[in-house]
Length: 152
Image (cartoon, rainbow, N blue to C red):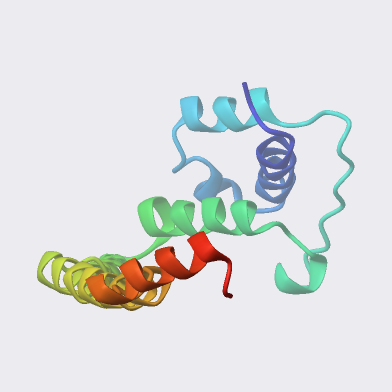
């Protein structure tokens, strides 16, 4: 099932493709174009103005991404494609590095160990304050005798 956002993005892409030069349009495989036409929201009315940029026309992020993929895969020169692929690889490596730092196994276990030690310390402090103080045996016996005679 196609989400409404994706269906609207497909409609935007189909409408934008109506305005590109025919030689560029022919570079996109027919099955891909048919996919976007099939999944396009027919009730979504999107008007494309060739004199304005995609950002000025509130084109969805999904549609911009699809157009960018078309450029990378079908319209870019080999130099442009290599630059784009290198940039995507760089961004992917950067994201993986951030994930690795965030979810580093050694740090997770160390953090959990530190939290466990701190929680244990706090629990011990609470338990000490909650537990009644032990009294000496002679004081307990003396209080029982006083209670027996009600000298309190």
